[in-house]
Image (cartoon, rainbow, N blue to C red):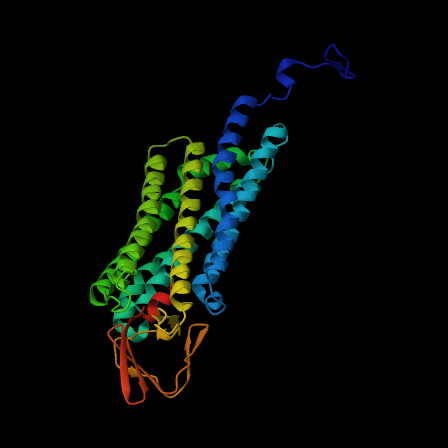
Length: 385
């Protein structure tokens, strides 16, 4: 084509020229997306490292840990795709990627939301096991969140099919925008998400509040250390944040979609909500792993102050032992297994008796009996890791 705007077939009329994209709008939208998505993306790797660091080999085989890793992988994948999509939109605004890329990002985000609520449900089941509640009470507790998740999956599959059909043809982006704004699938998903998250989070908060009131014991040998009740209060605050933050943004999603706000703003709200929900549940798991690691790695013995002749004696030290609220005696084996950690007791004859979260250790040495009260964490707390 020559410099005067002609071609071998003749001059190009203004109506036949391809539309020039609004570069300012594209750059503004892409930069917003990069700033939001990349900020969370840079924090995912340290969070994943912390998740592995504060976990044990046995804890890494539990469903709660596997689900957390999957949630981080999905969030990282979605973040990389969002970054790549935004960068491509800035560098090549006249050759945008097909709508299927946007649909794939949305599908990953929807599965992330369902996975986050599944993690909360697993936590609820870990503190309310079937053996503790019985079949009827367990079914009553878990039936609503399970039915909601099944309904959300069915709704998501139908929505994906509708979006895939709308994306076909040259008017795919326009058709997707119409489907996005007019169909009820998003409203169904976000309403079910609010109910699901609220139910599971409030049930979990009620459970740990009840357990904290009944099992809030202190250590007789280290009264200044963090008590079980204090740990429960901290866990309650974390669980409350897992409920308030996602629910607030889910309600914001419903408000903007019912008020027919610009779809770009809706996308930004959804992106922030999904990332914050993932960070909330994974951070709670990291915190629980940190507590469990500190409890299980405390040695059974510590050095006492030197005597007058300079000798250093060994005294019993506070340690963690799974408590079930009943009397248990562990005197036959010389090694006790606590999770994946093993404690070898350097005694000749030792008896450990536990009741209501307090372990009494009795050492028989030359006819003398020494009893030490030890604070313990119940077994269900370690299941949160």
